[in-house]
Amino acid sequence: MKTFLAFLMALFIILTFMGEKTEAKFISETKFMMDTTVSITVDGSHQDIQKAFSAIEKINFLMNDYIPSTEISVLNRKGTNKLSCDTRQVILKAIHFSKITRGAFDITVGPLVRLWQRMGREKRLPTSNELNRALSLVGYKNIKISGDTVKLLKKGMMLDLGGIAKGYAVDKAIEVLRERGVKNALVNAGGDMYCLGEGPSGKWRVGIQHPRNLRKIVGIISVANRGVATSGDYYRYHVINGKRFGHIINPATGWTVQDTPMSVTIIAPNATTADALATGVFVLGPVKGLELINSLPKVEGMIISKGMKIVTSSGWGKYEVKRFY
Image 1 (cartoon, rainbow, N blue to C red):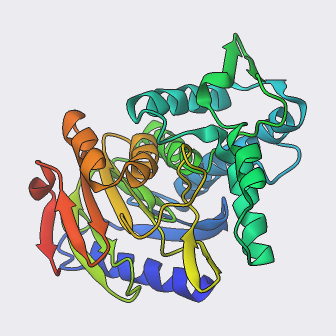
Image 2: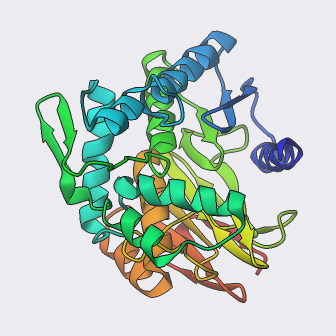
């Protein structure tokens, strides 16, 4: 796992610094946090980078539902909790994306996530009773927010912010860097990233991962002052009865999304939007997903389905540098 992540980071650095022609001194540091590899590149100082890492770590200790002391873990256990401004903002943003994706993105999938994790360990598919029990606890409309207090209206509900928290953490890191006067930077949290300003040779160049051959890329995009995120079935999945079951779950059916699509890449004004929409569009599929992307201002996307069938939004071409498939 760590070897593969190191390969991806090396590939990204190669794309970033290809054709270097400026005299700006960029520095990079990488840490393993939020259950992924986080890399920060700036034309600033090591102190700038450390402040950005601290911003990401703060979000992790608020929203990681696998750490018992976090606000989200307490909310999941008790069904109600007073939350910080950051956590409330993420939940409010998540509800917004649930509405525009008509429930395809839903942070109340926690019970389904835990069910499929158990299925992966036990190497079996869920029974109808197990699936229906978890499904009965899913529904973003059962989140009630009153002031700084959030309540889950059904006992046993669990929030899972895995589809939005990393994007939000990236945006908070960028916010810190901007406050410190950094004009050019890239924060990449396992594929959820924000490209601030420009890199050493102009706009930041990002490779789109091939969803089945992880040593290859599908193409290269060039972006500045935009968030980029990819959701795919190639990084986290379970093999049950010889079949691959990815980690992205359809909140309407309780089943994981299979083969179509295999990956979704979103370019958006910020990393939070890109992160949430990448997941939502993945669940919606290539037809409804592309319709949604084309309906949203300043949002573009690429959807790769089984057989390497690729569709892109109407404005994707203005970011694309090269396509290999």
